[in-house]
Image (cartoon, rainbow, N blue to C red; front, side, top):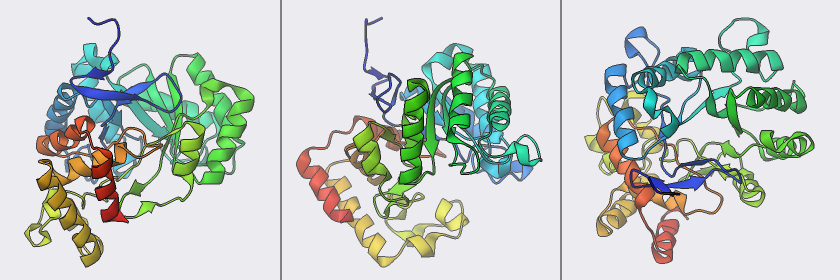
Length: 334
């Protein structure tokens, strides 16, 4: 065993924000893992998800992102991960598990949503039960609660950290001024509750959906972890010829193909396809590798529903793009 290492399974790790936590450069979004036979709206059933999680560990894709409300507030994405952790207890310490709290869950009264002390504590305990683990590596606030004092929410997480139930805090779906408030208030309380990452929607076709947050993350040493980094799956080889897409493809099943596959977007996608072919890689690999090279960007957490998708995404963590290549890709999106 080496005295110190910077990768696992060949996957480079990077620090999350200015904390000591390191996560795989490419992680795994599990928002569509669940039990579709129950009508929860998931796309990846247990018998498909469990082998994917095992393959992810083999590839070094060990930053797993979920949320209690994923798939119709069923908790089923957490349950899938929990089943894998139960079957592989010795690998728990190899995986960085993150989940979220905010939205209505685990109860039907007004006290079962938001970021009150009561809700956060009950939510975390319920998530731990579904995940079949006794601690969370990372807890995300799934939004900003303007009705609860920020100090109350942060002090609650401080207590959970003191109990060993949570290790780090991060936030999601926040505006720039909200992140500024969180950073300011945490500075008056404890470094342990300073958010180390922000998970907002971002893709290189559309940029930030909440402008200015990436810039603030870069300035404050907070990792920006985009969700839907591949523009809901459009930025993949699968849609280079959209006429070949059909039932089973996400954009077709969700009725988004016509909306996203505009001529302007397809022109950019085809150019990315040319660059990917020229550099002997895939479109999704190229896009994720490009995002990793942007200042302020943290780990990427694309979803995968097949081993082939997972492997293409994982390859981005090991992809080295020189300044000339980064510039060519940036020109496509400019």
